[in-house]
Length: 258
Image 1: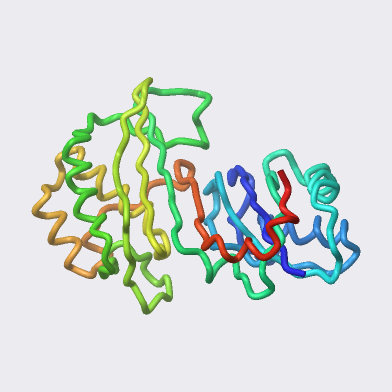
Image 2: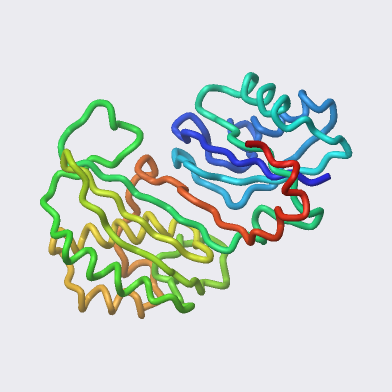
């Protein structure tokens, strides 16, 4: 039987999602906990990996087991053993060939910024003091969200090892919140290594009027990471949503938790 896990976590204490030698990872802890509860060797596959310090409001992973799980009971046992900064919200039976990574149709991220010093946001939002022109930043965001595949190599981490740098960005915009806080929202069919943090860093240059919208166009078409802005810190980044086709759940919908 194949199951999906719907997960959230604070990434501050972890070296990212992916299992690494001699480093604490979210995936590693989930593997250990599942293996202990089920009494078998379990290794989950995630919808994607998040880097050190990046958070997830919604992450998915799948695993296989010959056992038919009591969804509510196993959900309770699982969360009882996990640390407080990792939560499993649902265990979902799915079709046997459903894949947390390859079946994901859309992924969304948020990047949080605060412009007034706030002791309670440290580690969860980026403190950036310079005045920003949000209108300009949103004008730049519309250039990203064309709904068609484009080459975003200029935002791909140098040495990231990705030959295909085509992505389809469906949504990108900035929201001004109370208490001098900003949130950048972006949704795409896929993301390159370090892509969102590089986009945000470049948009902060626009909002600070270090570069113009015309220069932003040149960056987009350059294909060179060196032309774009710096990568902002990981602490403000959240994987916020992962969307799947409904049919991967429908054949076993009667088993869902409520």
